[in-house]
Length: 117
Image 1 (tube, helix red, strand yellow):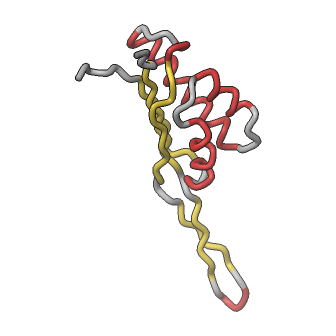
Image 2: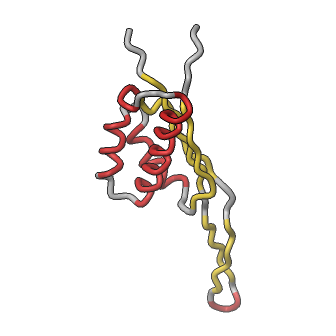
Image 3: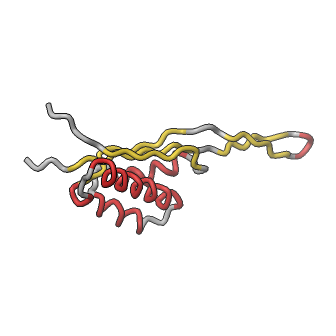
């Protein structure tokens, strides 16, 4: 089996919950770069702006590091992992304290060229 060259990009410690980002990344998995950018441009979620930046970075990595043509690339894999959680306390009545968890995300994108058989 031939060794496949792939381009990667990661962003870490993004202050948005992973479950909100996963909704957006599920839309672009397996799509071409042009389709993925169009989907992200028209998705009314805050995470779509962040994912679009990571996708753009992965395309730039492919062009600069591997001399790949962006027209041939597609989103081979994209995933979201949970980052560190910021823990805060919200005071409530009668001396109680409720916990607030401000979650962070790590987003990864892998691009590969299409194999034309």
